[in-house]
Image (cartoon, rainbow, N blue to C red; front, side, top):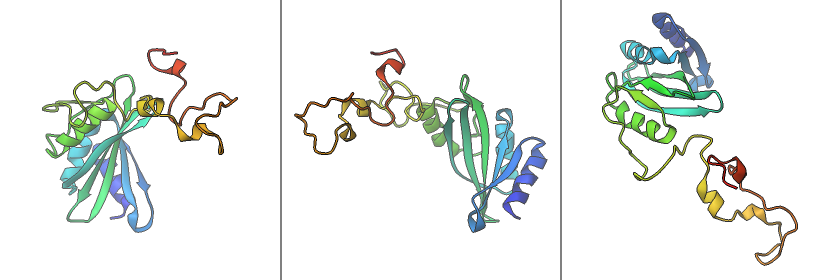
Length: 189
C-alpha cells in the first residue's frame, strides 16, 4: 500500500479526519489528522490495521493556535509507518491517554506532560520525569523564557573589535529567544 492509500484507509475506518502524505520517495509516510476526541479511536484502529509497534509520541507548540499531539506507529509486518496527529486547544490542552492501547506510551506521555503541560486523561501517573521538583513552567512551550540566555551575556551583543571594557553607544542587544523584560510573564521591568 502507498502512504496515500494507508491514510485514506484509516480515515475511512474512523469516519473522521484527514489524510496526507509527508516526505517523498522511499521516505514517504502517511499522516492522518484526527479530531482530539477521536485520538484513542485512531490509535486503536491503526493498531488493529497492523501498526503494531509504538515508536514515539510528542507535541508541537503551534503558537498561537494550540498544540499538535503527534504519535508515530510502525507496521512490523508491512514495514511502513503512519503519523497520527490531533490538534489541542491552548486553553485546555488535554487528550485521552493511549497507555491502554500501547503501554510503552506511558513514558512519552509523562515527558510530553512535563515539557508542554499537556494533560493525558486516564494516564496512571503523570509524575515528573526529567525536571527537578521545584522547576516551574513547561520548557518546550514557545512562551517559556530561556533564563540562561538572560543571565549570561550574549556574545553577539558586541561588535567585532569591541572589548569588555569598551562602552557601546548602542542599546544592549538581547539574545535570540529572549523577549524584552517588560513582555515577560509577571511584567518584569
